[in-house]
Length: 401
Picture 1: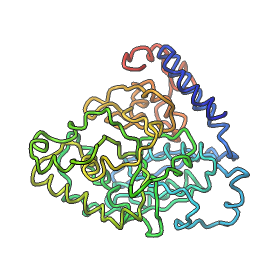
Picture 2: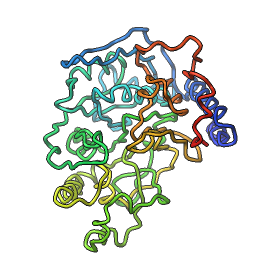
Picture 3: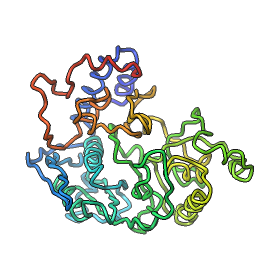
Picture 4: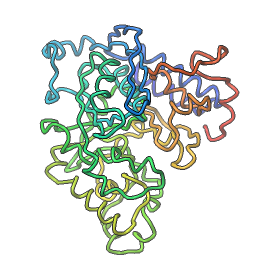
Protein backbone atom coordinates (compact mmCIF):
# COMPACT_ATOMS: atom_id res chain seq x y z
CA UNK A 1 0.00 0.00 0.00
CA UNK A 2 1.45 3.38 -0.98
CA UNK A 3 2.14 5.96 1.74
CA UNK A 4 -0.44 8.42 0.41
CA UNK A 5 -3.09 5.69 0.45
CA UNK A 6 -2.23 4.81 4.03
CA UNK A 7 -2.43 8.46 5.11
CA UNK A 8 -5.74 8.99 3.33
CA UNK A 9 -7.21 5.88 4.96
CA UNK A 10 -6.22 6.98 8.46
CA UNK A 11 -7.60 10.47 7.96
CA UNK A 12 -10.95 9.02 6.92
CA UNK A 13 -11.49 7.52 10.36
CA UNK A 14 -12.83 10.78 11.81
CA UNK A 15 -15.76 10.72 9.34
CA UNK A 16 -17.10 7.34 10.39
CA UNK A 17 -19.29 6.51 13.38
CA UNK A 18 -17.12 5.31 16.21
CA UNK A 19 -17.58 1.56 15.86
CA UNK A 20 -16.93 1.67 12.11
CA UNK A 21 -13.83 3.79 12.60
CA UNK A 22 -12.28 1.49 15.19
CA UNK A 23 -13.12 -1.68 13.29
CA UNK A 24 -11.74 -0.22 10.05
CA UNK A 25 -8.57 0.93 11.80
CA UNK A 26 -7.87 -2.47 13.35
CA UNK A 27 -8.58 -4.31 10.10
CA UNK A 28 -6.24 -1.90 8.35
CA UNK A 29 -3.40 -2.62 10.80
CA UNK A 30 -3.80 -6.35 10.29
CA UNK A 31 -4.01 -5.93 6.51
CA UNK A 32 -1.04 -3.61 6.03
CA UNK A 33 1.24 -5.68 8.24
CA UNK A 34 1.11 -8.48 5.71
CA UNK A 35 2.38 -6.17 2.96
CA UNK A 36 5.03 -4.17 4.78
CA UNK A 37 7.64 -2.99 2.30
CA UNK A 38 10.79 -5.06 1.98
CA UNK A 39 9.86 -7.86 4.38
CA UNK A 40 9.89 -11.55 3.68
CA UNK A 41 7.90 -13.34 6.36
CA UNK A 42 9.04 -16.75 7.53
CA UNK A 43 6.38 -18.44 9.70
CA UNK A 44 7.54 -19.17 13.24
CA UNK A 45 6.94 -22.34 15.16
CA UNK A 46 3.73 -22.50 17.17
CA UNK A 47 5.55 -23.03 20.43
CA UNK A 48 4.89 -21.39 23.78
CA UNK A 49 7.72 -20.28 26.05
CA UNK A 50 7.37 -19.15 29.65
CA UNK A 51 9.16 -18.79 32.95
CA UNK A 52 8.26 -18.60 36.62
CA UNK A 53 10.13 -16.11 38.78
CA UNK A 54 11.06 -16.63 42.40
CA UNK A 55 7.86 -15.22 43.85
CA UNK A 56 5.75 -17.66 41.85
CA UNK A 57 4.68 -15.08 39.26
CA UNK A 58 4.36 -16.54 35.79
CA UNK A 59 5.91 -14.74 32.82
CA UNK A 60 4.30 -15.88 29.63
CA UNK A 61 3.80 -18.19 27.99
CA UNK A 62 4.61 -16.37 24.76
CA UNK A 63 4.19 -17.79 21.29
CA UNK A 64 7.31 -17.69 19.16
CA UNK A 65 7.08 -14.79 16.74
CA UNK A 66 7.24 -15.18 12.97
CA UNK A 67 10.74 -14.66 11.61
CA UNK A 68 10.94 -11.35 9.77
CA UNK A 69 13.65 -11.16 7.12
CA UNK A 70 15.16 -8.35 5.10
CA UNK A 71 13.86 -7.67 1.63
CA UNK A 72 16.06 -7.56 -1.44
CA UNK A 73 17.01 -3.92 -0.91
CA UNK A 74 18.55 -4.88 2.47
CA UNK A 75 20.20 -8.19 1.49
CA UNK A 76 23.68 -6.82 0.81
CA UNK A 77 23.98 -5.45 4.35
CA UNK A 78 22.55 -8.55 5.97
CA UNK A 79 24.84 -10.96 4.15
CA UNK A 80 27.96 -9.16 5.41
CA UNK A 81 27.07 -9.81 9.03
CA UNK A 82 27.15 -13.60 9.01
CA UNK A 83 25.82 -14.89 12.34
CA UNK A 84 27.04 -12.19 14.73
CA UNK A 85 25.70 -8.66 14.81
CA UNK A 86 27.68 -6.15 16.84
CA UNK A 87 25.91 -3.45 18.79
CA UNK A 88 28.60 -1.11 17.44
CA UNK A 89 27.53 -1.55 13.81
CA UNK A 90 26.77 2.04 12.64
CA UNK A 91 24.48 0.82 9.85
CA UNK A 92 21.96 -0.54 12.35
CA UNK A 93 18.83 1.15 13.65
CA UNK A 94 19.33 1.26 17.42
CA UNK A 95 16.31 1.11 19.74
CA UNK A 96 16.45 1.28 23.54
CA UNK A 97 13.64 -0.03 25.73
CA UNK A 98 13.25 -1.08 29.33
CA UNK A 99 12.51 -4.71 30.16
CA UNK A 100 10.78 -5.85 33.33
CA UNK A 101 8.34 -8.48 34.54
CA UNK A 102 5.41 -6.06 34.90
CA UNK A 103 5.56 -4.63 31.39
CA UNK A 104 7.12 -7.62 29.61
CA UNK A 105 3.97 -8.33 27.63
CA UNK A 106 3.92 -4.77 26.37
CA UNK A 107 7.61 -4.87 25.46
CA UNK A 108 7.17 -8.10 23.49
CA UNK A 109 4.25 -6.60 21.53
CA UNK A 110 6.24 -3.42 20.86
CA UNK A 111 9.21 -5.37 19.48
CA UNK A 112 6.85 -7.47 17.36
CA UNK A 113 5.26 -4.36 15.88
CA UNK A 114 8.63 -2.81 15.02
CA UNK A 115 9.80 -5.95 13.22
CA UNK A 116 6.52 -6.49 11.39
CA UNK A 117 6.56 -3.04 9.81
CA UNK A 118 10.31 -2.49 9.36
CA UNK A 119 11.58 -2.44 5.79
CA UNK A 120 14.81 -4.08 6.98
CA UNK A 121 13.98 -5.89 10.23
CA UNK A 122 17.34 -7.64 10.44
CA UNK A 123 19.00 -4.21 10.55
CA UNK A 124 17.30 -3.29 13.83
CA UNK A 125 19.20 -3.72 17.11
CA UNK A 126 17.41 -3.59 20.45
CA UNK A 127 19.12 -2.41 23.65
CA UNK A 128 17.06 -3.64 26.62
CA UNK A 129 17.56 -2.09 30.06
CA UNK A 130 16.61 -4.48 32.88
CA UNK A 131 16.48 -3.62 36.57
CA UNK A 132 18.98 -5.39 38.78
CA UNK A 133 16.39 -6.41 41.37
CA UNK A 134 13.37 -7.11 39.20
CA UNK A 135 11.37 -10.22 40.31
CA UNK A 136 12.55 -11.74 37.03
CA UNK A 137 16.32 -11.59 36.70
CA UNK A 138 17.85 -9.99 33.59
CA UNK A 139 19.00 -13.48 32.58
CA UNK A 140 15.44 -14.85 32.68
CA UNK A 141 14.09 -11.86 30.75
CA UNK A 142 16.84 -12.27 28.16
CA UNK A 143 15.98 -15.95 27.71
CA UNK A 144 12.30 -15.11 27.22
CA UNK A 145 13.11 -12.53 24.57
CA UNK A 146 15.43 -14.95 22.78
CA UNK A 147 12.85 -17.74 22.87
CA UNK A 148 10.15 -15.45 21.49
CA UNK A 149 12.39 -13.83 18.85
CA UNK A 150 15.11 -16.38 17.99
CA UNK A 151 16.75 -14.18 15.34
CA UNK A 152 16.46 -10.82 17.11
CA UNK A 153 19.54 -8.62 17.39
CA UNK A 154 19.62 -7.45 20.99
CA UNK A 155 21.61 -6.95 24.15
CA UNK A 156 20.39 -6.74 27.75
CA UNK A 157 22.02 -4.24 30.12
CA UNK A 158 21.63 -4.28 33.89
CA UNK A 159 20.38 -1.05 35.44
CA UNK A 160 21.48 -0.55 39.02
CA UNK A 161 18.48 0.96 40.76
CA UNK A 162 20.60 2.46 43.55
CA UNK A 163 21.97 4.80 40.89
CA UNK A 164 18.78 6.83 40.99
CA UNK A 165 16.58 5.61 43.85
CA UNK A 166 17.75 8.32 46.28
CA UNK A 167 16.86 11.01 43.73
CA UNK A 168 13.26 9.88 43.17
CA UNK A 169 10.51 11.85 44.87
CA UNK A 170 6.87 10.85 45.31
CA UNK A 171 4.57 11.21 42.32
CA UNK A 172 0.82 11.35 41.64
CA UNK A 173 0.91 7.64 40.75
CA UNK A 174 3.15 5.05 42.42
CA UNK A 175 4.04 3.37 39.13
CA UNK A 176 5.78 6.59 38.07
CA UNK A 177 8.21 6.15 40.98
CA UNK A 178 9.65 2.92 39.55
CA UNK A 179 13.43 3.47 39.18
CA UNK A 180 13.34 1.88 35.73
CA UNK A 181 11.30 4.89 34.52
CA UNK A 182 14.46 6.91 34.97
CA UNK A 183 16.71 4.57 32.97
CA UNK A 184 16.38 6.84 29.92
CA UNK A 185 18.40 9.44 31.87
CA UNK A 186 21.34 7.06 31.90
CA UNK A 187 21.39 5.71 28.36
CA UNK A 188 24.60 7.60 27.62
CA UNK A 189 26.27 5.74 30.48
CA UNK A 190 24.58 2.33 30.14
CA UNK A 191 24.80 1.67 26.40
CA UNK A 192 28.07 0.77 24.73
CA UNK A 193 30.12 3.90 24.05
CA UNK A 194 30.17 3.03 20.37
CA UNK A 195 26.40 3.62 20.16
CA UNK A 196 26.20 7.23 18.99
CA UNK A 197 22.47 7.50 18.40
CA UNK A 198 19.38 5.69 19.65
CA UNK A 199 15.59 5.73 19.50
CA UNK A 200 14.09 5.43 22.98
CA UNK A 201 10.67 3.77 23.14
CA UNK A 202 8.37 3.10 26.08
CA UNK A 203 7.04 -0.44 26.51
CA UNK A 204 3.38 0.51 26.04
CA UNK A 205 3.59 1.38 22.35
CA UNK A 206 3.08 -0.26 18.98
CA UNK A 207 4.67 0.92 15.75
CA UNK A 208 2.59 0.70 12.57
CA UNK A 209 5.12 2.22 10.18
CA UNK A 210 8.71 1.65 9.11
CA UNK A 211 10.90 2.57 12.09
CA UNK A 212 13.65 3.65 9.66
CA UNK A 213 11.65 6.78 8.92
CA UNK A 214 11.89 7.83 12.56
CA UNK A 215 15.56 6.83 12.69
CA UNK A 216 16.32 9.15 9.77
CA UNK A 217 15.22 12.21 11.73
CA UNK A 218 17.83 14.96 11.48
CA UNK A 219 18.71 16.69 14.74
CA UNK A 220 19.55 20.18 13.51
CA UNK A 221 21.99 22.61 15.07
CA UNK A 222 23.07 21.54 18.53
CA UNK A 223 19.87 19.71 19.45
CA UNK A 224 20.29 16.62 21.56
CA UNK A 225 16.87 15.01 21.23
CA UNK A 226 13.96 14.91 18.83
CA UNK A 227 10.34 14.23 19.79
CA UNK A 228 6.81 15.26 18.81
CA UNK A 229 6.01 18.56 20.53
CA UNK A 230 2.58 19.70 21.72
CA UNK A 231 2.76 23.47 22.01
CA UNK A 232 -1.02 23.82 22.52
CA UNK A 233 -0.77 21.97 25.86
CA UNK A 234 -0.86 23.98 29.08
CA UNK A 235 2.83 23.90 29.94
CA UNK A 236 2.36 25.50 33.36
CA UNK A 237 0.54 22.45 34.77
CA UNK A 238 3.70 20.36 34.70
CA UNK A 239 5.19 22.42 37.56
CA UNK A 240 3.88 23.57 40.92
CA UNK A 241 2.66 27.05 41.77
CA UNK A 242 5.73 27.38 43.96
CA UNK A 243 7.92 26.89 40.92
CA UNK A 244 6.17 29.55 38.85
CA UNK A 245 6.04 32.05 41.72
CA UNK A 246 9.82 31.91 42.16
CA UNK A 247 11.43 34.19 39.55
CA UNK A 248 14.75 32.38 39.87
CA UNK A 249 13.11 29.09 38.87
CA UNK A 250 10.50 30.23 36.34
CA UNK A 251 13.11 32.50 34.80
CA UNK A 252 14.97 29.38 33.73
CA UNK A 253 12.68 29.27 30.69
CA UNK A 254 13.45 32.88 29.79
CA UNK A 255 14.45 33.17 26.14
CA UNK A 256 12.94 29.79 25.32
CA UNK A 257 9.55 28.84 23.94
CA UNK A 258 9.00 25.65 25.90
CA UNK A 259 6.50 23.08 24.66
CA UNK A 260 5.36 19.84 26.25
CA UNK A 261 6.78 16.67 24.75
CA UNK A 262 6.36 13.05 25.79
CA UNK A 263 9.58 11.25 26.72
CA UNK A 264 8.21 7.84 25.68
CA UNK A 265 9.37 8.36 22.09
CA UNK A 266 12.66 10.16 21.50
CA UNK A 267 15.51 10.21 19.01
CA UNK A 268 18.68 10.86 20.99
CA UNK A 269 22.19 11.95 19.97
CA UNK A 270 24.26 10.15 22.58
CA UNK A 271 27.53 11.80 21.53
CA UNK A 272 26.16 15.28 22.29
CA UNK A 273 24.37 13.89 25.35
CA UNK A 274 27.63 12.61 26.83
CA UNK A 275 29.64 15.68 25.85
CA UNK A 276 27.08 18.00 27.42
CA UNK A 277 26.74 15.98 30.67
CA UNK A 278 22.97 15.99 30.30
CA UNK A 279 22.53 13.20 32.81
CA UNK A 280 24.06 15.46 35.47
CA UNK A 281 21.82 18.37 34.43
CA UNK A 282 18.71 16.22 34.88
CA UNK A 283 19.97 14.96 38.24
CA UNK A 284 20.49 18.55 39.42
CA UNK A 285 16.78 19.25 39.03
CA UNK A 286 15.90 15.96 40.73
CA UNK A 287 18.08 16.94 43.69
CA UNK A 288 16.29 20.27 43.94
CA UNK A 289 12.93 18.47 43.82
CA UNK A 290 13.97 16.43 46.89
CA UNK A 291 14.56 19.67 48.81
CA UNK A 292 11.67 21.69 47.43
CA UNK A 293 8.69 20.30 45.55
CA UNK A 294 8.59 21.92 42.11
CA UNK A 295 6.67 19.23 40.17
CA UNK A 296 4.38 16.23 40.73
CA UNK A 297 4.79 14.01 37.67
CA UNK A 298 7.64 11.53 37.88
CA UNK A 299 10.49 11.51 35.38
CA UNK A 300 9.02 13.90 32.78
CA UNK A 301 9.51 17.37 34.37
CA UNK A 302 13.32 17.18 34.64
CA UNK A 303 13.44 16.46 30.90
CA UNK A 304 11.18 19.45 30.26
CA UNK A 305 13.38 21.68 32.40
CA UNK A 306 16.51 20.71 30.50
CA UNK A 307 15.23 20.36 26.94
CA UNK A 308 11.85 22.10 26.44
CA UNK A 309 12.24 24.79 23.81
CA UNK A 310 15.25 23.09 22.27
CA UNK A 311 13.74 19.88 20.89
CA UNK A 312 13.79 18.80 17.26
CA UNK A 313 10.08 18.68 16.44
CA UNK A 314 9.03 15.32 14.97
CA UNK A 315 5.70 14.75 13.26
CA UNK A 316 2.90 13.96 15.72
CA UNK A 317 2.20 10.74 13.87
CA UNK A 318 5.16 9.25 15.75
CA UNK A 319 3.55 9.56 19.16
CA UNK A 320 -0.21 9.23 19.27
CA UNK A 321 0.03 9.24 23.06
CA UNK A 322 -2.38 9.32 25.96
CA UNK A 323 -4.28 6.18 24.93
CA UNK A 324 -3.98 4.86 28.48
CA UNK A 325 -6.04 7.75 29.80
CA UNK A 326 -4.90 10.01 32.61
CA UNK A 327 -2.72 8.93 35.51
CA UNK A 328 -5.65 8.44 37.91
CA UNK A 329 -8.63 6.98 36.06
CA UNK A 330 -7.08 5.46 32.95
CA UNK A 331 -10.18 6.37 30.94
CA UNK A 332 -10.58 5.72 27.21
CA UNK A 333 -9.04 8.21 24.82
CA UNK A 334 -9.26 8.75 21.08
CA UNK A 335 -6.56 9.32 18.49
CA UNK A 336 -5.38 12.82 17.74
CA UNK A 337 -6.25 14.11 14.30
CA UNK A 338 -3.85 13.16 11.53
CA UNK A 339 -1.96 10.10 10.30
CA UNK A 340 -0.64 7.40 12.65
CA UNK A 341 2.79 5.76 12.78
CA UNK A 342 3.00 4.94 16.49
CA UNK A 343 0.31 4.40 19.13
CA UNK A 344 1.23 5.00 22.76
CA UNK A 345 -0.80 3.90 25.80
CA UNK A 346 0.74 6.44 28.16
CA UNK A 347 -1.36 6.92 31.28
CA UNK A 348 -2.75 4.47 33.79
CA UNK A 349 -4.64 2.08 31.49
CA UNK A 350 -2.69 -0.59 29.60
CA UNK A 351 -4.26 -2.51 26.70
CA UNK A 352 -3.23 -6.00 27.86
CA UNK A 353 -4.79 -5.42 31.28
CA UNK A 354 -8.06 -4.06 29.91
CA UNK A 355 -8.31 -6.78 27.27
CA UNK A 356 -7.84 -9.53 29.86
CA UNK A 357 -10.42 -7.92 32.10
CA UNK A 358 -12.77 -7.82 29.10
CA UNK A 359 -13.19 -4.10 29.59
CA UNK A 360 -11.15 -2.80 26.65
CA UNK A 361 -11.21 0.68 25.23
CA UNK A 362 -11.90 0.80 21.47
CA UNK A 363 -8.28 1.43 20.50
CA UNK A 364 -6.97 -1.42 22.67
CA UNK A 365 -8.01 -3.74 19.84
CA UNK A 366 -5.40 -2.14 17.59
CA UNK A 367 -2.74 -3.42 20.03
CA UNK A 368 -4.08 -6.97 20.08
CA UNK A 369 -2.69 -8.21 16.69
CA UNK A 370 0.85 -7.72 18.03
CA UNK A 371 0.27 -9.53 21.32
CA UNK A 372 2.22 -12.79 21.50
CA UNK A 373 0.97 -13.75 24.94
CA UNK A 374 -0.73 -17.16 25.09
CA UNK A 375 -3.93 -16.09 26.82
CA UNK A 376 -5.00 -18.08 29.86
CA UNK A 377 -8.45 -16.51 29.77
CA UNK A 378 -10.55 -18.22 27.10
CA UNK A 379 -12.33 -15.94 24.67
CA UNK A 380 -16.08 -16.31 24.35
CA UNK A 381 -17.08 -18.40 21.34
CA UNK A 382 -19.13 -15.58 19.87
CA UNK A 383 -16.23 -13.16 20.06
CA UNK A 384 -14.91 -11.91 16.74
CA UNK A 385 -11.42 -12.63 15.44
CA UNK A 386 -10.36 -9.11 16.32
CA UNK A 387 -11.29 -9.55 19.96
CA UNK A 388 -14.47 -7.47 20.23
CA UNK A 389 -16.85 -8.95 22.78
CA UNK A 390 -19.63 -6.99 21.06
CA UNK A 391 -19.67 -4.18 18.56
CA UNK A 392 -22.15 -2.33 20.74
CA UNK A 393 -19.32 -1.76 23.22
CA UNK A 394 -17.64 0.49 20.69
CA UNK A 395 -20.47 3.01 20.79
CA UNK A 396 -20.43 3.47 24.54
CA UNK A 397 -17.36 5.70 24.78
CA UNK A 398 -18.42 9.19 23.77
CA UNK A 399 -14.83 10.42 24.03
CA UNK A 400 -13.85 8.54 20.88
CA UNK A 401 -14.03 10.70 17.74
